[in-house]
Amino acid sequence: MARSKEETGAWQSRLHDEFHPWPLLNALDRSETEHREGIVQAGYGFLTLMRAYQEFALFTFKEIQSHATTLDVWNIALNVAAMRRFRVAWYAYLAGYYFGGGSALRSVFEITMYLSVVHKGHWGFDELARIQESQLGDWRAQKKALEQHHRKLNTEVKKKVYGEESGLSPIERESMERVLSVLHLHVHRGESDVLYEVPEMVQTQHIPKMVQQPNLEKASIFCNVAVLIAWSHVRVLRFLSSLPFSAVWNKKYDVLDRSLREYIEPWENREASSVFVKLIETSFSFKERVAK
Image (cartoon, rainbow, N blue to C red; front, side):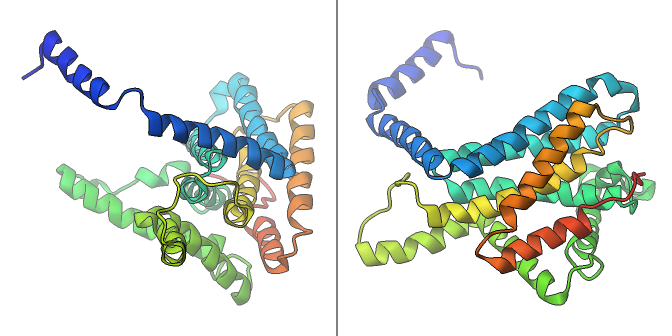
């Protein structure tokens, strides 16, 4: 039964009177703002690179507006979803929630890996939702069929993007498995936060702050993977339309693609840099448009 206007007003007033003026939440808001200012100063090069990537994605979406009759709706939807998830990741990172941002990055990477396999001609954009007519029935049957289908797709994506059919060596494949396992920890039960905070609490005997001062060690866990995932998205954005892009778009693409490579290659962690570059060169390099 719906509440009356008076009941709704009383419900809101109880909450307001009990918790206003939100002193702890306002303090958290201020901490997030301070963290954003600090992390921007500490990593301006990374900030510039990631803003350039986001600007390029938006520029691509704007340019293809004139290509409307040649666009695949599944391709568009997947790329827009990738950009939305990256924005979620980006705002979490700026506010100090590095691992929460990492959980959203995983979604972006799942999309770009799927698009990589599509662009290499292994299946169509709409394969995500494709099930046999014989599997259609009530919602439970459809749900079960889609779950089975998605498990099969995930296995194929892994095999072709960073598995035995990817062109990566066994050692490189193991490195990528570790990267994906870290992203996995960010998602399920917040395990990366738990594993990081428990030893800290045992040592300090203090409950951790919601947002701490910029921590470059923790932030790097987000930043390194964010650069790889952004690069993978840049590579598939060029196939958003079958029509040629403008000279302005191509210049932006060339500058950004080169800048991403130049950012990764000099890393002190040579294992990560070489594997990331190799992954882009094998799984996100396309000789021609072969997507179905």
